[in-house]
Each structure stands twice: as structure tokens, then as C-alpha cells.
Image (cartoon, rainbow, N blue to C red):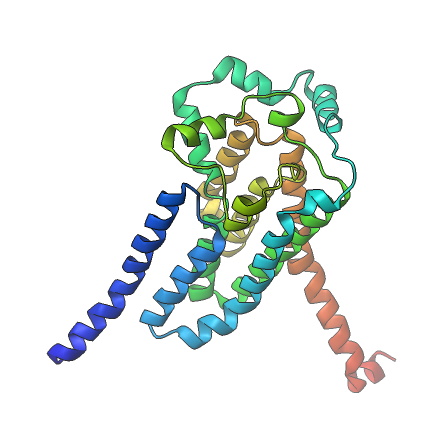
Length: 293
């Protein structure tokens, strides 16, 4: 390889690192946490360096458009919805457990290690689906499209719920300590996840918990693809479920709701959709219709 070609190759490979440095400096300056759109841009730059640009743009544009639209609407969903439900979820928790799990965990088990571990796991909310989606895109395209479809169905079903039933988290409804803010404050970081949240955050989107839904959906696809070899991945959703309750960000009911929404989206894409497609193909084929008669 000639010297000029080698220098050009190294320059292109440095671009993702330069982008990370610029974005990192921006978010450190404004003290916020980047959302999925910034990770996707990083992946786009990486794809360009690897000469996958056309395929990446074609395959990821629908996902990015719909997901960013979801984020934009999510930011003011609480203002479009009706009365915020503050006590209902707490009442269900009391009926199920005789106490509020967030308050119980914070009172008897709170320590610095759990605070920071929980905040770290909580912050993976947007990183995980983007990273997992990229892995599937590279190595299992068929499952990539199924995963993206499930992710979007789950997200928009949750968004519809936020509009119809805006609900308050434990830190608002039962005055649980919002540990996340304390951890972010100690690190000098604002508790914002995306630019949209920084502009106009929505505190009333507790049920269902998408923080619980996304890692569970990832686990379902990992188990589908790798079977028993993927069982260790279950530690991820379990850790996040514990963290969102411990941090006072969600009730256990919210977690159950998130798991239900993710499971429903997964089953719809993996079980119902293929049957619908097969049925449509069958009804469109005159020979199959005549044979069945």
C-alpha cells in the first residue's frame, strides 16, 4: 500500500474518534447525557469509514426518523394528555406488597455503591438499543429489521399510554428520594438524556417503564438468536429493573408494564406478523386458493 493511501485510510479511521471527542466536549460543557441520535451519527461515521455508507443510510433512516420523532413528541406528551395520575400506581404497589418498594429499598439498603451502579445502568437506556441494533445490522440483518420493528411498536404503544394515562414516578408521587439527581449533581451532570429532554422534559411517563422494556426486548432477541448461550444477558434487565425502582424513577408496576409491552411487541413481530404475511400471500395466489377449494 502506498504512503498516500495509508495516510488516507488512517485519517478516515480517526474520524469516529474525533467525533467522539467533539461530542464529549459539547456534553461536558452543557452537562447533559447524549441521546440515541448522537450514537447513530457516530455509527454513520464509522460506517462511512468502512465504506458501508449507502447500506447504512438506507437501513437506518427509517429507524432514526421514527425514533427521533418519538423523542420529540415524548418531550411534551404530558401536556397533551389528561390529568396526571399520581396516587393510582402507589395504591397498586401497596395492595401488592404492603409497602412502596422504592421507599423500602432506599430506607434499608441505600449506599453509595448502589447509587452509582444504579445511575450507570439507568444511563444505558439509549446506548443499549442502538448498540444492539448495530450488531444485528452487521451480523443478522433479518433479525435487525424484526428488532427495529419491535422497538418502534413498543415505543409508540408506550407513547400512546403516556398520552392517555400520564403517570407520576415514585420520586413525585410518594416523595421517594430521587437518587439519580443526587448522583448526577455529584458528577456535575444534568439529569437530561437527550436534547429533547433538555429543552422540555416529561416527568409524567412512568407507566410503562421503557427503561425496563428495552433491555428485556434486547434479551428476547439475544435468546432467540443464541438460545441458552445468551442466558447471562438476563443479568442486564434484572439489574436495570432493580435500579429504576431503587432510584425512585419507577414503581414495580411500571417495570411489569414495560416487560409486558416489550413482550407484546416481540410476539406481534415474531409470531403474528409472519402469519399475516403468509395469509396475505396465500389469498393472493390463485393456485393456492383453487387447491384449498
